[in-house]
Length: 496
Image (cartoon, rainbow, N blue to C red):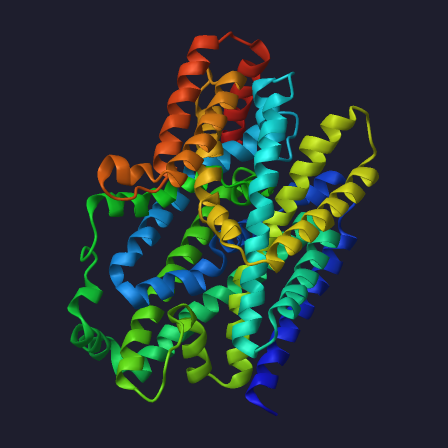
């Protein structure tokens, strides 16, 4: 049996397991809260790893190691920013959001929480935030499908369209039928696969390159700057990299996990598990890239065509083909976990925040769950059609989608949880200001205009949203006894 066949068997087993989890979750889904939020029943381990897997995507196993392989440790500043941001997200947002979303009319989506938190009777805040989620995530999902198709094309020579259809069919099937539970359980498995892959490759790799000391000596011989965190960086560059951490507060597909955990008390355990997973995964990624530098220098018979494939290449060299297939499946898992998370949040926005509002009538949970499934299918078809054309427009939009969500929702989520005087008008104008700033800053490269080099657009977008939200809220503030009561109740929920 050829190596490629054994690897395809591993990937086939992985995909079958994902579909099985989708079927199991389908059996456990009986109402809209189950479909959109898993009935608020997630344990700390599933919450933590599903949030991590939904967050990291193919960036963890391809983008980051590829960047470090090319430029050295100076590219690791983004990992520092993300680690700080993720930790603060767990500490500041997770417990309060879990408590407040239940108090605020048992909100099951971010837009519905914002409406209920601010008692916004105009529906403008909910509809606007639902539209923001729908637009950004449709392109985000499309980008993930492109990544999956390219993965099959590069790994097995399967043509682009066939690879696209395979990835889309599997991820859409388990998301459509199993809903949030399927997404969370599959993300948990996928998170474990990613962690195992990123620990085993460097552990075995150090043995192949003569141990840590010889590995680093080899890298220094190539270029000492590769091991220098500051070489080739600037203050603006480091600030831009670390500013990635601000994005966590506003990513709907990540913070929705905090709403779904079984209790506020469990957020502390989930934080420890989640941060442990993240730190070990990031260290594994960094060491894998460095080992790749040393290994290919020491073994000129091996060639690395694409630096972003360094994890895959080392896995295929170091491991038996069946296990190398597992490693390939881990890369695919990183891609699929993010697609599924984004699909379920987009479906939630369409169903809970647009369809229910626009229809203006009571509908059964069965009807809404059916519509939610059809929403997954509709968004997937649009994303698939967009992915057929690998246009730079899609990729450019996705490149700042993280900034778009972080700057649109991040300050509003933080202020809504920590500041009593934050109101709906402040949230609406702040959200619009943050989103517009990101788009304008990116397209006109205002960082270069003002500082002589690019500054990541999330930073100005986040700050302008924060300022506008505070100023408008203070200018239009009127005390609302229901809001005050719910705010106090959410704080009491933190102590239970």
